[in-house]
Length: 398
Image (cartoon, rainbow, N blue to C red; front, side):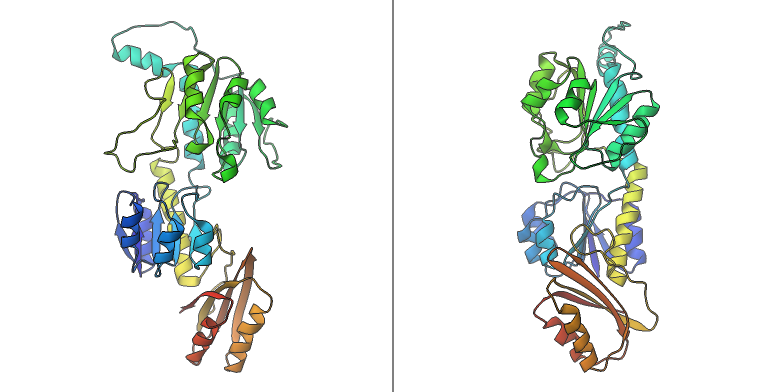
């Protein structure tokens, strides 16, 4: 089996996949859609990060593709429904770079609060300015976190450890950690926060979450940070509120349009503004996080190939069955309709095949069954299972 890893994925992923017996081909950059479509024939596993776009059209032409590993948190660059309908499992790394994003957020909050970017720029220009004007401690200031998932919750804990008051807003009912206080609305959070940091996911409903209205509601002199998704904010509105002095500073790590490679020029209306930190989508880009992500997603892909395990898959039912010695495993992805398991077992029984172990999971319109059977069975069993009307994909694992 062949695995294709794009976007400079960490060597730990290569090690995990090669140890599992796969041939690994690597490429440092993302591929545009036509090039990606041309590269996928013969590829069983694809590894990407945030820049590669996997559309339904590309997936439809990738007839050899079994699984995709998103070596990052987000999966909005992948058409998950299309992948599921084709029997292509998708895995990501929902936790591995949490600490890295939190540390960058805190570093930027401190840098903006102390106006370090402007002091640094002045020093490089030969200007010595020891003035404390506009520089503050973070202790005692209110940190407003929008999105209280893995990253938001950990930022809450570490921010509080620095002496910040923490408030948060999330559309889901989340338990507050430490002394953090939940706000009943985004409006309430904006009214009381000295620093607003966005950590929402990439669902379409979060598009244009933060615009002119929300920036206007922020406190005069407040700081704004976005380290989640580029499309959740109006960059032009942010620019206006920075230039007017309403906001004292901002840090942005994600953008609507990001260069595909280091050779492309980065364009943004936020370039050149004072007390604005712009970083090239590096929230999770630490060596520690990338090694963890490489190992985590690489192991998920290897387990899927070897055992059919789909634990923590983001688009197909999550099923994991311990291996049974002296057996073959049937990994059967199918439409979630009544009677599928009865039909599978009827085929096996009619051919005199004994079931050693079996486990079923469902998710929306899909069902996924792992069935261990003895190694001696008639060849027609596989053909009959594939011919079942609900079958999406059947794999036979040794």
